[in-house]
Structure formats: C-alpha cells, structure tokens
Amino acid sequence: MEIKHGASILTVNVGSSSIKIALFSVHNADKKIFEAAVQNIGQPSATFTTPDSTTHMVVSGHIAAAKLLVSWIADQMTLSTVRAVGHRIVHGGPHYYQTCLATEETLAGLRELTAFDPEHLPHELELVKLFRHLLPQAQHILCFDTAFHHNLPTQSRLLPLPRRFEALGVRRYGFHGLSYAYIMQELRHTEGDATAGGKVVIAHLGSGASLTALHGARPVDTTMGMTPASGIPMSSRSGDLDPGLALYFANTQGYSAQRFNQMVNFESGLLGMSGTTADMEKLLQSENKDIRAKDAVAMFCYQVKKSLGSFAAALGGLDTLVFTGGMGENAPKIRAKVCEGLEFLGVTLDAARNQKNARCVSADGGTVGVYVIPTDEAVTIARETSHLINKVTSKE
Image (cartoon, rainbow, N blue to C red; front, top):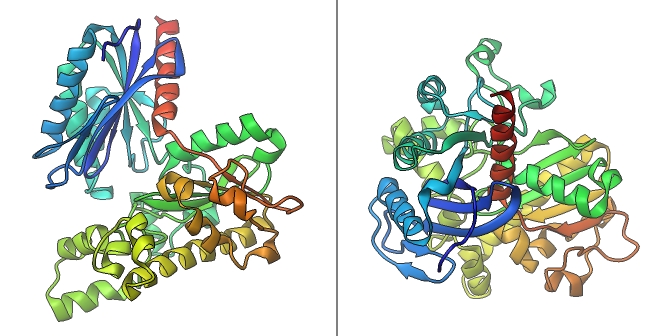
C-alpha cells in the first residue's frame, strides 16, 4: 500500500496490551488515511493489523510493537511529512487535563503520577519518549482521557474517604473521555443540539467498559472512579468491589497489594466469572451449554442495566441512550438484555433494527431514543492535536 498525502497527523493510542495508530490529513482532522495496530502484545495470540493484512507474530513488548509500526509506516510514506503526533494519555492525575505539548517539564510531572495509573501511564510515557526519538521533526501532543470528566459536579467527583486525601488528587476521574467526546459530537451532528443537550446516557461497552450520564451536553456522573479498574465489570477487570476483599485476600491467600491489583485488573470480570474467556462473542456462543458463561453474560448485562437505572435517577429521567464500544456496537443480544425490563423508563427496542445494528434501534413511538454509534478515539485525538498545533502556529 502506497500512501500519497501531504502534511499529516499521526495518532498513537497505547493500551495495556496494544498500540493503535492512525494517520490523518493535517488540513482535515476528520479525514483518516489509514490505521494499523499491534494487539495482544506479549501473548502468543499477538497480531499485527494493517489496512491490507493481519499477521500473527511474537511481539515481546510495547517498544518492539512501536518500532514495528513505525518501520511499517516508513515503508509506506515519507516520515518527514508527519507534522504532529497526538498521544492518548489515559490518566493525567489532578494537574493535567488540557491537551498540551509533550514538553520535558510536562513529561517529568506525569512520571511523578504513575501511582494513579500504573497499568497504563508508564507504557504511555515510554512510548511518547520513543516516538519523539523516531519522529523528531514532529510536534508531540498529549491528549488526556480524563479531561472529559474533569469538571464533574462535586457530589459525583468526591470519594467518601477522609477529606484530606482530596488534596492529593484522590477523586473520581472517569475515563473513556476521548470516546465520549467523539460520541457527543456525532450525536449533535446527526440528531441535533436539543438531543445532545438532553438527558443522555452513553454506554461504552468494550474490553474496558463504562457509562456516563450527561445533561446540557456536560457529564454529571460516570461509573469509573479514580482508576479504570472501577465501575461495571469488564473483560478482565472486576469493576467495583467490597474494599474489605483486599484485607480478606491478604489474610487468607497472602496477597500483596500488587497481587490483588493483578487479579482485579487481569483475572476478573468476564474472564474470571466464566473461567474460560474474556471475549463476549465467545461467551454468547457458549452460554446455552456452559452455565459459567451464561452467568458471566447475565452478570455483565445486569450491572450495566443497574448503572443505567441509577443514572436515569440522577438525571431525573432519560431522553437518549447511546451504545458504543465493541460490544455496544456489535452485540444485539447484549443491548437487548440491558434494555429488557426498562420499559418503565421509556426504553423500548425495535427487535429488527437492533438485530441489524441500525443507527437508531428504539421502537417507533418510544419516549427514549436508543442509538448505536461507532466510536473513534483516534478522530478525537486528531482533532485535539490539530486544534493545538494551529493555536501554537498562530502565536508564532
């Protein structure tokens, strides 16, 4: 594949076991030229996906994955045309929430905050350093996943702990912010300002999963708290737990804090409940013959439904429900299970539309509009990056 374009923006999205990149025109941040990814890093099932192919290979770590991606890009285009690189940073802690240049001072400040997100932040900062070395001609921009929820109302933001910890940055941050920002722009574009400004709940149901409640196009609450491990159950994350379990496992299993963290982030959720897989598609295929798979699916849908109901209460009603993320976009059965029994809120699905993954899946005459909107964090990163480099350039 030969890529022909002018000046461009590269986006970098680093996960705990993946790196996704995408290229955009610097003149149109909505125009995606290509995307590629290395997933399941460090696992036998690692894959390298480009627009032309998917290859299974051994990829030892994030550095190796990043070098593989940049090497592939260099074979397709002239790297000097990359004007800016937008990096997704999952956690900015209490001080970093506005898109900014990746200066030495900022990166040093973020390195001091790795305790807020030890699963993501070290990898991300390591990769920012590497991409700055590999693409020295580009401006490197940091886009924070926690920015979207930074101004949550006090009653949503505070955690019920001794108040002195608030000064240390212990609070509800919320995540998937880049995804939520994209969905809100799409909702406004397709359904209008009145819909986007109403009482909205967005369910981002992917490997990581969360829900956010919005009113007046501003977030008023979200399921994730100080870390991405909290909230509803996810593929391998537990979501919210009784805090007493940490002491229980320490006393009965000899678990250290690190071992407990490993369990709740990588061994729990759908994977832990089923005992077989974190893949919802596989669980749905086997739930009729595997009781643990059935339990995992039911538990996940119940917790999503419960959070949705609590957010409707917080909003004083519900006008719009949006499903996004891998499961939210592609699993009609999950949407049906979540919405079943919510007719009292005005949520009624059209079975045929839902089965087709239509954009609007609510029944005609229903009081709540239910939509399926594919998300694209890379587009949000590109938009944020383009806005900042244009702002910086205009000042020069």
